[in-house]
Length: 172
Image (cartoon, rainbow, N blue to C red; front, side, top):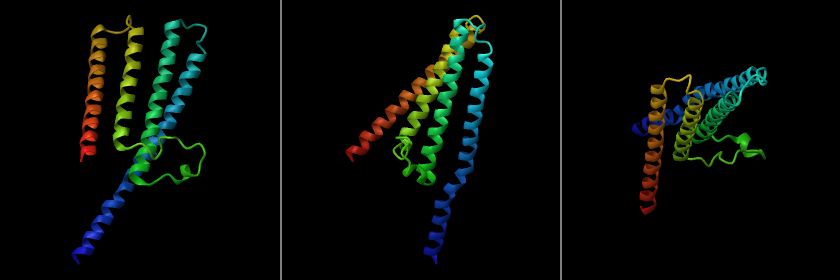
């Protein structure tokens, strides 16, 4: 009787991973929104191409890079998390254009990719703020620098923790 209860409880816990599926579906929809926003930005700036100075052009490029980094992050998160926590993506196993990271990105690698992407996105925002220094409050720029430094420090600490934990695991 107790063994059946334990089996039933483990079955519920194991199948609860499927509760993550709606989150991944929303992330896919978010990826579509990011794509649409990129097209909207391009159309908007394309109509102004002859009126833009070099700084405005660079800001446009930074916006597109920012959206691309966010989209890549969302895609890596969707595919890696789904294949790690829910189910293998069988469609990808038979495809010649399967991304190389699929099935090879561990949770540790995923954390580092997320942190690295956040730092890159923060860098782009900071670079954009430097281009717009005449329109930004200096205190706001200093705050952005502090936040960026915190992201970098957090990323370094996370990488160090993962490095030390992998050293400890390999010694055991």
